[in-house]
Figure: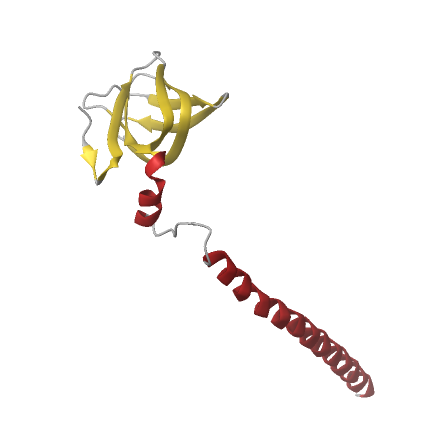
Length: 166
């Protein structure tokens, strides 16, 4: 039974990947796997254990863990709908942990992460109005900067003349 965390749209997720035994994880439609941590198990053998993933047709090494040196790694990875295959190369199993997120409740996640929901109302109009003044100011600033550059060039010529007189 999955442990629910914060809301029904986010469940705790974990699995153990054993060396040489690829593990498929099917992510259902409308779901996202958020992988946040991996670590070696309680009993470890010396040597390097590499966690690899295959997703969307691409292979990638996620982390490399070593007994008594680096036994865990913090991750921030999101895998959307479909199949993900995790593999460990090396002597130790690697434990994965994270959350299975329900994309249908995305508004709750956005609000939790400080994002505003985009419901297509007047917010977009406000953003357009906010952008207009800086554009005008930007043109004025460019013109002012060009004038300053011209003045600096003139001052530079006067400085060169003064240097030549001495």
